[in-house]
Image (cartoon, rainbow, N blue to C red; front, top):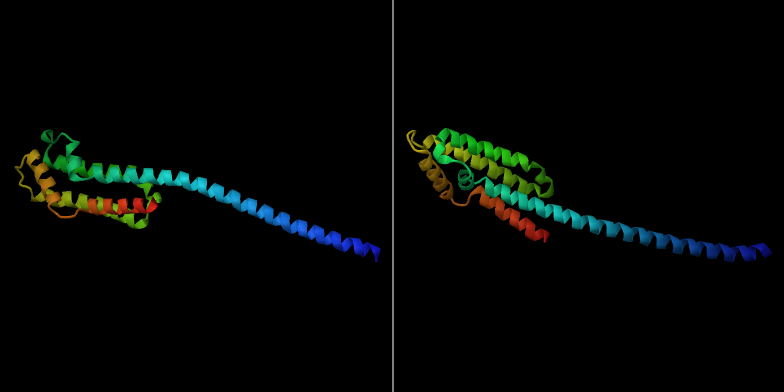
Length: 169
């Protein structure tokens, strides 16, 4: 009977100590998890911002105006210009394909649409140009036709990209 008098308070103290220690360890684990998550989030945010920057460059580099400014148009035929532009668009997108994991599916679809639309536009406009048109005239006509189409898919994708970045910040 005497042993029970001493054991019950000891068990109560042991149980209280266990409960306090369990909560302390649980809080410490949650705190470390939170700190790790916060650190990881900062790193991921930095990586995501770089991805948005790269995608912005991608969209800018694949506009007809920029594509044409990077090639020796005067030394090329209309067919060579068309082929080179479409090839450059494909290469730019292939190079930046991995950036899709950092952006929303909606934005990535708009970027893909911009790629497809500009390639289709180039392919559609080229046959409409007279065969005897100089390559410089073709380049000017292509840029003018693209700009006159109203809001381009590139502009739509850029607006979505900027909105997504603003939401991130």
